[in-house]
Image (cartoon, rainbow, N blue to C red; front, top):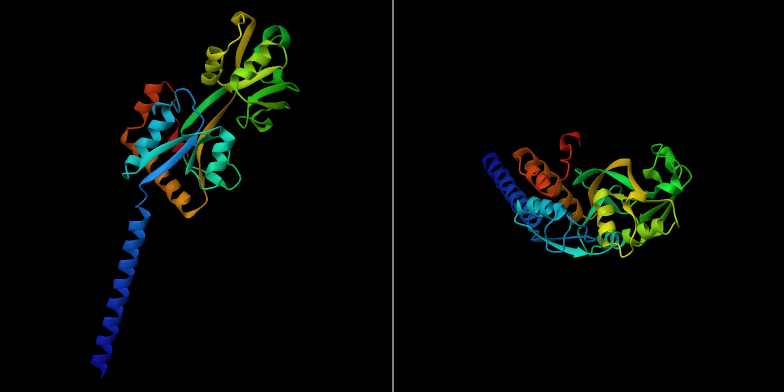
Length: 257
């Protein structure tokens, strides 16, 4: 009887182990069975070009190719992009400096850089550092910046485009236009109004890191893990820096995160 009991126990244990392995393998297979992710953002020059090139596009393609996952991009305004991810209509918003309600930041940034203000020298007077902005109005593309980005009190007013912000500065309707240097230059290049560049100035007012945003769903958390492991793997292999060098951007300090 004792031998039969031991054999029965061993059989039961073998069956249980079989179930664990079966379901474990199934769960793992399901886990890695993500074939495509949808990223979303506006078309930012040199970051998310419409031809599929750009810093953010190439980082994401490199990261997810490690798992055989293809990346499709949906172009949309920043606020709309965040909502698409929150509503599970897209997987990843690229990129933001702070979380959006119901979304979480990736562990590693894709971009670290300074931001600047464009202004008319005659209106503002001598530059005194960030203190120059105190109690002034600052124009920002919608959702890009808010008062928390500044070390002095300011009034941030949202506009639709950088070109609109630049136009309002030229027309003397506001004090400052804040943006990344690349986007300020893009706004100047795209502007349809003429102005004398020597009458204006651009000065640095802060620095920040930009992270991709993920949904808090099971799929979102899995993609967040894939992104974090992929970024760090490529960083250690030395395969990320050439992308930053190609586009002329500073390489983030990934070891600090």
